[in-house]
Length: 96
Image (cartoon, rainbow, N blue to C red; front, side, top):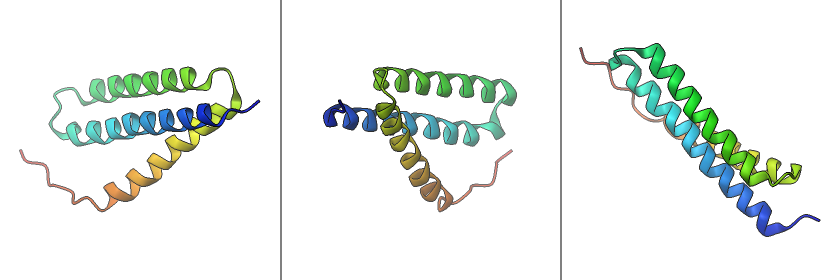
């Protein structure tokens, strides 16, 4: 049986995972021009962001596909919101 409170919890966990993942991606991309080792920064950021998001999805799912879908919905909503918001963010020229 599907429990609405657990679906809502999974949805909000998906929102949190999305904020962490895409916010971390934005932070990483902003730091790349000044990074001493940009490849290492990119790879480490990917591993941390992906690992934390997968752990969040795993615990939010409780072994039920409905909760995974609720988490994924929250994750995708954050992605759409942040892409629209960051797209309007003015880009700064890198300073050397």
